[in-house]
Length: 69
Image (cartoon, rainbow, N blue to C red; front, side):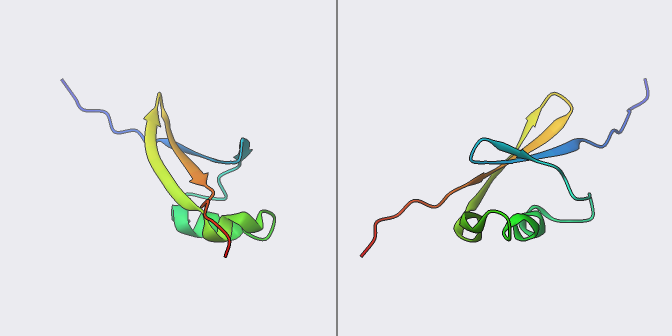
């Protein structure tokens, strides 16, 4: 019996929006930085994951909620 190695596709989401993977060469932290220009809340977001869902590696950027003042 041979072992088959397969690369998982990555998915990223933030605030209910699916974000395309800019490339496997980017770390999840670098992906967050790529999208921070479009979604400024990503600057303080934390990365949840990866969670394996089928043949996908799912990352979720979770907005850091705090109190003001």
